[in-house]
Length: 350
Image 1 (cartoon, helix red, strand yellow):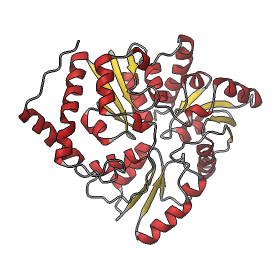
Image 2 (tube, rainbow, N blue to C red):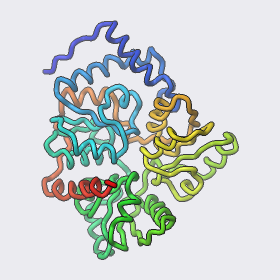
Image 3 (tube, rainbow, N blue to C red):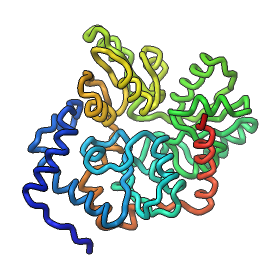
Image 4 (tube, rainbow, N blue to C red):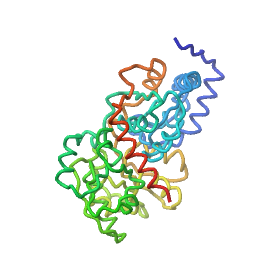
């Protein structure tokens, strides 16, 4: 049994001070409201215990930007979008990884860090995109488009990656597809991103035929053009920032379209009176922490799968290492799937 010391009042208050310094500017937290010092004090025992367990077990906690801010700033070691976390997984040396995100992301970490034991805080943290396509269905599509290179968006399960020529994220999708020698591309599983890829490649003068499957993200397909029109009337000078998983109706009305990391860079480098972030609410919370002088209007949507992560579940997973929450990938899928991820990282280099 792991022994975690009890924390006395000065240690708890110092941890609350650290957390409050990070979280005080978070306002777009539709589930829990604003962060007070007292609220930070209430979670301090958990963050202290998790960080102590990390040291004892030489574990790493990888965190996607969509999870709650107390996880990101309380216990996260590597925080970012799918591409960044894939790079961190490739470099990982820790024997234990807890992945606070969704299952397909933890599978990617396992593919790139097969020597590590990888766990998720909640085994039910799925993804509407990953669940939209099976390997059998992809094999049928590949027969339908035999001349096409199979390009899988990272938001898919490991068996889909194993059937792919290369994997991509929203950070690198345009450059990688442009580099491929194939004229035809079978892009799976996001049909809305496929539409945005067609538009962007056409804008760049790249001639490709894009085939796709029918998946969508249950967060990004919910936004409507009326939401943007109303916000622009109410907030003069507003910048609308969206993700390429949104519909063309949304991206065509946006001032900037990009990956999670690119959206963060855009906000950091630009100067506008207001920002409307058409993405998951966890990213908005992170932007509020890291850009406290900027103003964000409430427009984001919650991902129910990302919100299955919690400090309590992370603590319990790290403490007990339950076998039912370990990510296991069959060896044949691991060997094929990692090639698609490694090719992505290779093709992303300048």
